[in-house]
Image (cartoon, rainbow, N blue to C red):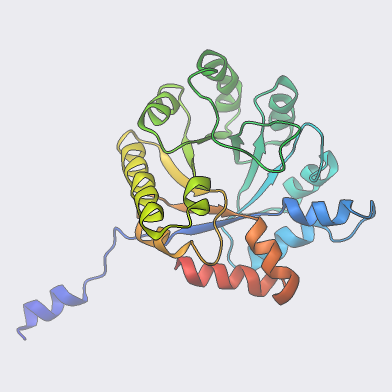
Length: 254
């Protein structure tokens, strides 16, 4: 092999950036709230996740405060040094909490009291005009905004038009597919959506239903820079410990 060929072979792919992991610690609070006491502590979980290499901590302050509480959010803001992503509904109360707390990122999600977990993406077409006004003070306050949407071209276009910084693509349909062919088709839909979102200048993350069995293919979708995972990691941590669970997930997506 000639010298020039050796040099060319050894050059690193500088465009490649490993996918990041954001850890949702809501269900640590769910476990704590089952006894109405103080343990396990969501803040301690956040610090362990950061120590193991998580690029961000996600928490959802719901209207009914079923897991994360206001005090949890305040303490997380003091403790988290990577990135704090506050998932929330598009309400005046949550807007004021975000402006007071100053997370690095807010993610707007649909929210219904009767749901066990978030069901589907934010209906951006229906709420577009309200969304545009809702984001203005957050942007002025230096808080980035993400919208949890279905991997659809129309939703992506509206997110960009509303001046969102990021979209989180809903991967729930992918996670629920039992048939390998259908799962592959859904993954391709997500990949196309991510590519389109990036072409419009949006950052792209993905989440919902991702776990140790189905996450691996996402490492090949370079347009997705981060995945948000909570339930699967906390469930694995019940058997292996949180540190091992986070490190295992990071190894898979790397």
